Amino acid sequence: MPTYPYLTQVVHKAARARPAEPCLIYQDRRTGNARFAERVARLAGAFGGIGVGAGERVALVALNSDRLVESLFATFWAGGVACPLNVRWNVEELAFALNDCGAAVLLVDDVHAPLAAELRDRVPTLRACVHMGDGAAPDGLLAYEDLVELGPVREDAGRSGDDPAYLLYTGGTTGSPKGVLLSHANLVAASTAMLAAGCGTGERYLHAPPLFHVAGVQVMTAHFLGGQGPQVIIPAFEPRALMAAIQEHRVTDVMLVPTMLQMVLGHPDRAAYRLDSIEQIFYGAAPMTQALLRAAMAAMPSVGFVQGYGMTETALTIMLPAWYHTEEGQLRGKMTSIGQPLPTADVVIRDPQGHEVPRGVVGELTVKSPSVMLGYHERPELTAQTVRDGWLHSGDGAYMDDDGFVHLVDRLKDMIITGGENVYSSEVESALTEHAGVAVCAVIGVPDETWGERVHAVVVPAPGALPTAEELIAHCRARLAGFKCPRSVQFVEALPVSAAGKILKTRLRAAHRP
Image (cartoon, rainbow, N blue to C red; front, side, top):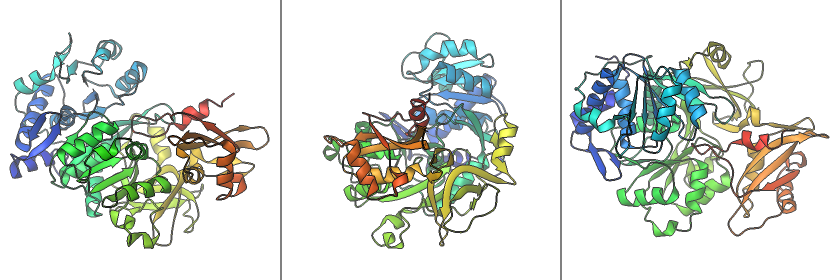
């Protein structure tokens, strides 16, 4: 039997305590806790039959579904390491990750099944490809439901503690992907701390973020650990699909990155859906402007908002509970922060020499926590650069106030240096989004012969609005020092975003390279 902590514990526990209660809801499929445990154990048995053992990598390229969740836990049950990959990657990117991790098994859904044959040819370590879609399995692919039906019930392999559980790839917004190894203990520690801080989910949680992203993985884990009700799953975020699922299943909790929240708030059909079951909205994964947050709070006054900060390398480590968003809580003046470190995390803001800076001074956010990754897969030098003396260096610029609340100012790499002055893009973006004519924006530094870099804003106008560059620059000048204000403004229909909803500033900057 495994030692504690281990991720499959939640499967055993729920099957014993609440066997008939629903666990997963996906489209017209309902899976109870006991049935979920049986399917996981049988799929793990089938995995064992195709050679999945301790430490073997099982890769998944699929939209969110009940079968994806089953596959993740079956991988742990079989002793393997789950490697869910970005569904927006092309064949080149997927082949790179599969070869990098040495995947033994690949699971694909209907959408990605056409890629399986080419990936199998390009990844020599692959021993089997499994089709987890609803249609007939293409030639050469094993049928998922056949594996579940025929697989022998396998005893839990007992992987736990510091054994790797997930290999998640990160860095798509900043450069070539790198694999982050997270252990059973990493995920359980982060999720337990989330519950201890009073930031757990309620009765019915809906998956909106993709399950190849650490935010989706952690909140899923926390919901299981909290012993709550079913998890409602939609394949991918789309405003109507999200709102329809909330209405049909009376969802109580959902996590939305800012771009998702913006799309829901601005959707012309929002009033047609009954969304009054929602009790909490978790937000994070990307900076949230105060204008958007206050608009959301005004539109949904009975909903609690919970801020979460983390990165793939740390999982969630800092949170701002819902109380600070209430009328009473706002008097504390902490809503502009990302919150306080979770009970198991320690945070220090450091200067470039590694010394702690005084309160209120911007430096690099560093984290020490049992949730900090095992390391980057086969990149020991990068791991040593990132985790020094037990402290993970995040690359995020932040400061801590006198009450221990952390205020994020920008990714250090996104900081703009114009005429020798530091400009944090998030501060300019926050000012811009206070203008009624701005739906969403991104601020970057672009080359400038005079200033080295100039502040450049890329703006998506609000529906029906026609703001001018001069108008937006003047708006910023009324709120910010002159050197922080955009010197140029570009209007676009949409900003490039990752599958997790993060704005891809690398693409915006690339358009201005010589």
